[in-house]
Length: 189
Image 1: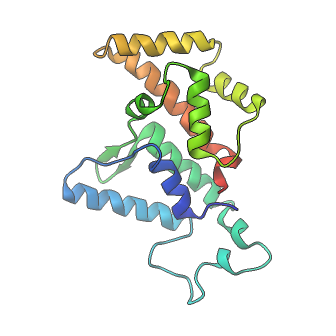
Image 2 (image 1 turned 30 degrees about the vertical axis):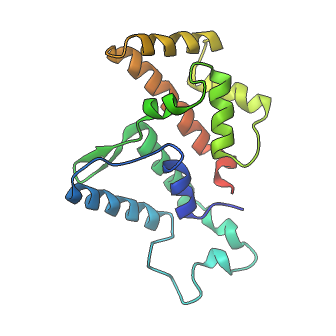
């Protein structure tokens, strides 16, 4: 089944331990931006379209397939990109998932195969194929080997104040996570 918008947004934010560390007024503004994304995804909280609820739960023949269309698919990509890559800029607030902190919580963050396998288990219903894994590695770590990832990760750990090393890992890992959330398999429960 295709995830409804609430499930989709939660499946991006919750496993990656997203939190917004702002003042109460900024949190309120930020939650309003989430509500706008929900409306873009056509599941506005507390705004049922009819007493029957959302069409995806009762309208034949599409049912849950109705959550994906020409409007909602780009909005899903935009949401993932906002949280993982560019930050969700709303009302002067730029908050994104701290992907490096999330990476450090994984069992073996210096081993790219372990990272991908752990993310697969955490975020997907079915295991990746070997061609999907190869494609992911080429996308976020182009022209480099698995050993290069281990070396770059270790360089960041060894020099915690080196912003360039942190930014390098942060950009690569954010790109990997974004790539995963764009996959058709991520849209499924």
